Length: 154
Image 1 (cartoon, rainbow, N blue to C red):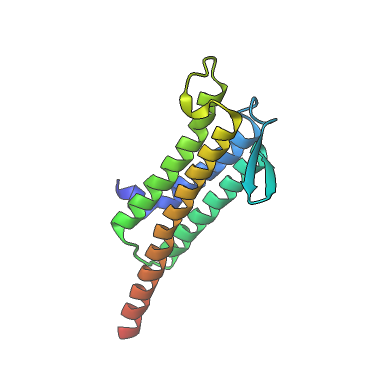
Image 2: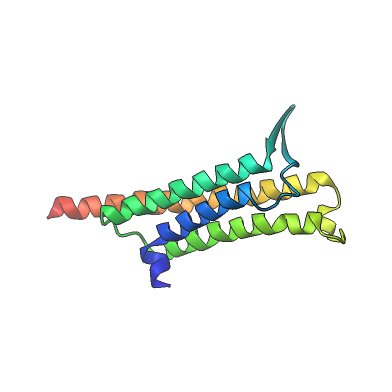
């Protein structure tokens, strides 16, 4: 648990590499499928490979933010860092496990009865993951201000 607090960038970079790797290799059944996002009168169609690569880059950027804090020795709040890391990686795990319910032999999982349900589910998971990033932003800003104030007083 100590490494989860002191070096969360390792977890994010590992998750990023794993996400990009699975975007290219695994889930071959869903590569041909597309995610369809309907915003008002517009439809946005994104392939699953591109979406996985985008998630991988986002995770790498989050890891870079934590790494920069580590280099500049900015002490982040312990519980905010742990909760952000666990919630973000939890959303990632739920995202990768969701196609199992859609593509299984028995499609008796009522959440994914039609094809648009998986898109709605992914939008919900993405919204939760986006809201969780507010923890990182607030933790980063407050810790940076706190560290800057301590350096100015010295």
